[in-house]
Image 1 (tube, rainbow, N blue to C red):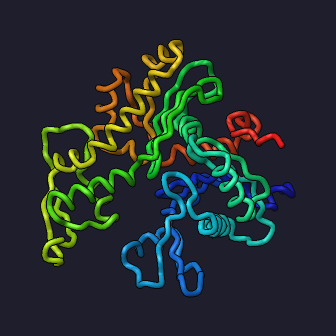
Image 2 (image 1 turned 180 degrees about the vertical axis):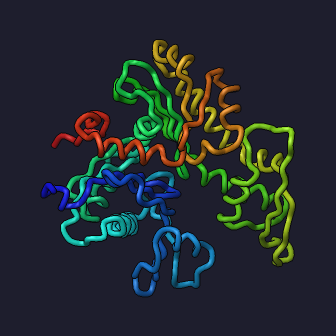
Length: 342
């Protein structure tokens, strides 16, 4: 047993707006929990983290708030993010002492230097020996098994909770990329706004997400699914149940879906012609939770004329890609974001 193993195993973290996933070297994915922290405002103590805290959203007494420390793929509350990261690291490494792992953290490609420093700071404060950063589309491409180090163009569209990343990758680097602050959360918000306007019904975040998973689609299908939703009637103030159809929900999410399609088209326009030619053969890979939206692949295929394929494990592709960087650190070190020169 090498001394470094005793120091704590290296790990990769996909710090997502919706979920945080942790991959530990030689063990694989060991944690997948919502990025939510419940804090008691009277004592400033953390009441719950992850799944437990998510259950509390919209159901807490006044002095307990459920905070999501990341919005649109960016840390909005550094202190809470730090505490959440430390909690997850300690939960994974049961030995509290001497766990100083190297950590690879995946963040959106559009993040600024300040935001990257905030992520690194959170990692160091949470007890890391060294923090490396990888851009999400690159991690997603590696996780999806695309040949990122070869001289062919590979395009990946990673739709997460807070951001959508569209990137063209060749020779271990990102050639062109777009980072949109639109993701699964925006689809939920669009559903909430639509139901409020059309049915005078106030929905909670969790209900909107359940509806999206159950019947939302980006492409019209012959079968029109229906689902009943419960919320508060804005007129009477009483609880009420309404039936909605998948056609209505498709109309509700049209704007954010259109923005995602538009971002893919714009990235294709900016692509060097040689690489664009490769895509006709390789197609475009869809990753992230948003890739599970029914019909999104057909919608993108229609808009771009390219073959679109949803990768095998879209929810885990970013963390698996970051994990590969931990496992094969020497070979894949080149894809990590270089340290700023002082």
